[in-house]
Image 1 (cartoon, rainbow, N blue to C red):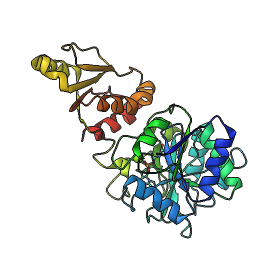
Image 2: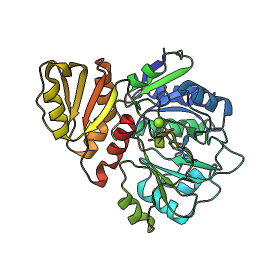
Image 3: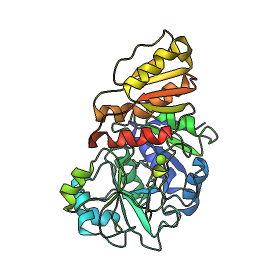
Length: 336
Ligand code: TXA
Ligand code: MG
C-alpha cells in the first residue's frame, strides 16, 4: 500500500520533494483533483506514471510549475515553453495560480515523455497551498516542473481525497508511492484546458473557468476543439467512468422510470438535484444546486454510489448555463 502522510507536517512536504527529486511518485493534492506526480525532466519517473495509470504513452501529461518569485510567469514556464503568446500571458496573469492549464509550444529538448510526443506542453500553476509548497521545495532540489495527471487509473473517476488515490494504486508499495493528505479538493473537477499553441485560444476541456471569463481576459474569441486537436484523455468520449453504468435523465424521465420499477429499483442509485420519490431501500444522494458545489462533490459522490454495489447510477441532467459546463462534460463522459 501507498504511504499516506498529513500535508500539514512540514517534514512530509520535504519528504515529497525529495521523492520527486529522486524520481519517485507522489500523490499530490491540488485545488482541482489529486495528481500522480513525478519530475517532468526524468523520463523513467514519468514512464512510471503512465505504467501505474495504465495510460497510453501518447496521451500528454500536464506539467505543474511555480515561480520562485510570486507572479513571474514567464520565468516559470521558460524551462518548458518555446514561446509565450501575449494572450497566454494575459490568461496566466488573470487565472494563475489556479485551475487553468495552458498548452504552449514545447522546447524540443525537454519533457518529451511527459508531453506524450506532442511538440507542445501543458502547463499549470496550481493554487493549492500543499501543491505550492511541494513545487517550491522540489525546485530547491533542482526540479523545475512536476508532471501530474489525475491520480486515477486510466478511464476511471478522478480522485478528490488521499484515500481515493491510495485506493487506485494498491499495487504500489509505500516506497513507490507517497500520498500527501491535504484533505478534499476544493474545486473538485479538473482544470480548464486552453490550447495557446495555435495562434488563438482553443478550449480543449471545460472546467470551472468559463469561456466568457477566458475571452474577457484574452481579448480574443475562444474556439471549441476540432479534429486537429491532439489526443487528450479527458476528451475521450468515455472517461471518468465508475463500474456502475451511469445514465443522465431529466427529472421527469427519472421519476417516471422509478415509478415503473417500484421495488425493482433497488439495484439503482439516484443522484439528483430535485427531490424524487422512490421505493424504500433505493439509495438517493442529493446533487448540490450550485454549480461550484456540485463540482466539488461530483467525483466523491460517484465513487460513493459505485461502492454501494448498484449496477446503475441514474443522474439528473445538470441545468443549462456555462457555469455547469464542467460538471455536464464530466457526467456525459461518465455516461458514455
Ligand atoms: O486539474 C488538472 O488538470 C489535474 C491536476 C492534477 O492538475 N490534472 C489532470 O491531468 O487532469 P490529466 O492527465 O488527467 O488530464 C490532462 C489533460 C489530458 O486530457 C491531456 O491529454 C491534456 O491535458 N494535455 C496535456 N498536455 C497536452 C498537450 N501538449 N496537448 C494537448 N493536450 C494536452
Ligand atoms: Mg484524468
